[in-house]
Structure formats: structure tokens, C-alpha cells
Length: 164
Image (cartoon, rainbow, N blue to C red):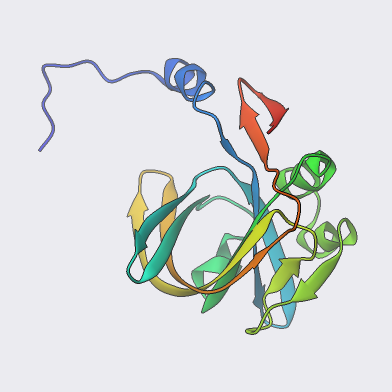
């Protein structure tokens, strides 16, 4: 139930406020119809450790949404400092088939693309989805984790990359 006594925050105000909420930079990938797909995401978080589950948000207008809508597996690849170009490549208007020309990619146990030198990669089995406003929230049970020896993660805050 919506309480109409309060004003709804406008888009610009919301986006400015959210720019201060720093987050890890991730490239989320999948394989669908024999092709690889991926997009840059900051809306990723842990849901539970029993069983290990995380969530990813994707705009339903995203050019690769169809692949994620119909997949069984996906991988969240958390980037490291120095991988800003990969984030930009997957987050821009680069055609889906050209996105994997940047970075070194391998395959996880399910055939999902995994960034070989990500800070950490979480390969997931799709378990549920919820639509909210312009986005779909995917839930995935983590079935494989690969960690880098280097303990560093690329962050995004105040509309710029931050090395942490």
C-alpha cells in the first residue's frame, strides 16, 4: 500500500543521492543460444549464506536482457582496479558479440564466461526473479567461487571509479 501523504522523489534527486552510495563494479555474464552476453552492474548484493545466494538487478531495456531472462546460469565477476576499461566496454553501447574482446575470459563449470583475473567471480544457478519498476531482480544460488590472489576491488562512487 502506498502512502500518498509523502511526495515521490524525482529521478534526478534520486540519482544524485544514489551516486553517493558506493558499490563494487561487476560484469555479469551468461551464455545463451551459443553466444556470450554480459553487462556492467553495481546493483549486486548478498542475500543469504544458507544456501549461498546473491542477487543482481538488470534493466529490462538492456540489450542483453533476453539472454538473462532465459538462462539457467550467470556469473558475477567483480572487477579490480585497472579494469575500468572492461567496465566501460560492458556498460556502454558496445554490441554484445564484441564485449568479450576485452579481458581474458574462461568458462566456469556451467560454461558461463568467467573473467580470469577478476577480484572474485561467483558462478550462480538462477533460482528466482522479481520485476520491480524498470528492472528485474535475479536471484542465484552460488555454485562456484574463484578468488584472485590480489585483494583489491574496483569501486564506483560519486560517478567515478575508486581504487580500494
